[in-house]
Length: 224
Image (cartoon, rainbow, N blue to C red; front, side):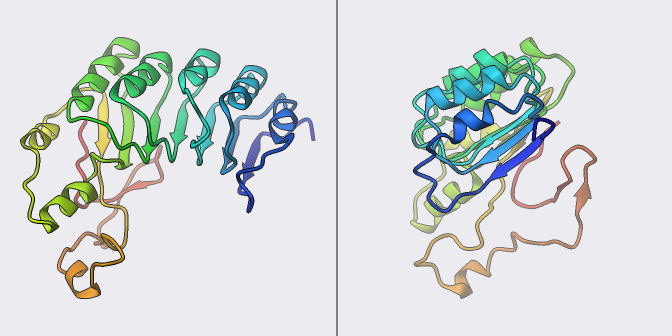
């Protein structure tokens, strides 16, 4: 299918990708790829290098990805949407490099990162202004250690929020930060009654956005 443009590969045995990357790299018109396969860096390099029409990339299992610089080096000038999930080792520097290397990005989602700092939003905003001034970027950090979920867990355990967390409420030009609580429950140990005390899922008043389907109000912060 040489004219194929949209591919989603959600496999059962996602730890074995076999010759899947090679096949994908031979789809010249591929514009969107979403996969749960554990692609290694060489696989990502092959796909991003050969698929010159690629605009949207979702790697939903980045456990085997040792470096993400290959993404912006090979496809940074083309990508408008990028989602990297289970990227546990991601650092502030990694995210900033992605933003600088992908000036056309409209949406960047990072999931699973455990070592991000409260300095990231300001650095990300500065990187965006330098790379693509006047063009907003939606930076979704919902499933990272900067999310509302993470800080609520701290409060549940009687710990205080990091004071720097409040600095995230500052307004940054060209950057929309999403820190929403996205899980139905805090953890398996939390009772249904205690989780219902927090009104985090009010679906009565959605704010629709033409570019991003919908963005609903809640505990996250949306800054423009």
